[in-house]
Image (cartoon, rainbow, N blue to C red):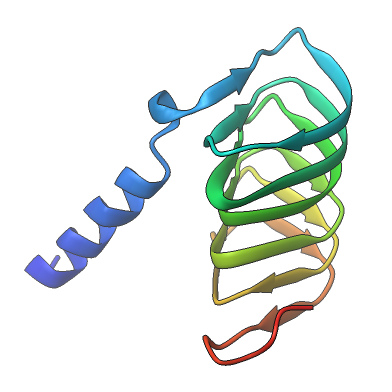
Length: 129
C-alpha cells in the first residue's frame, strides 16, 4: 500500500472513530428527532429524523434506523431505511444495509454491502436539496 493510500485510510478511520461519539445503546428503542452539535453512534433502534449537519453519524452493526439523516459524514454497519443527506461522505461497510436515496459529495460501498436506492453526488458548488 502506498504512503498516500495509508494516510487516506488513517484520515477516514479518524473521521469514523466511534469512541468520539455520543451513544444510543443497544437496548434503547427511540422515536423522535435528534439534533445538536455532537457526533453520534447508534447501536439500538431509532425512528424519526436526525439533523446533525456539522457532525458525523455512525450506525453500528446492531442498529436499525428508520430516519431521514442530515449529517456531515455517515458510516453504516447496521441497517438504515430512509434518505441520507451528507455534506461530505457516506460509507456503507460490508455488513451494512441501506434502503433509500443518498445525496453526498462522496460515497463508498464495500463489497458485500446491500444498497437499494439512488445516489446523487453533490459537488461543492451544487445547491443543497
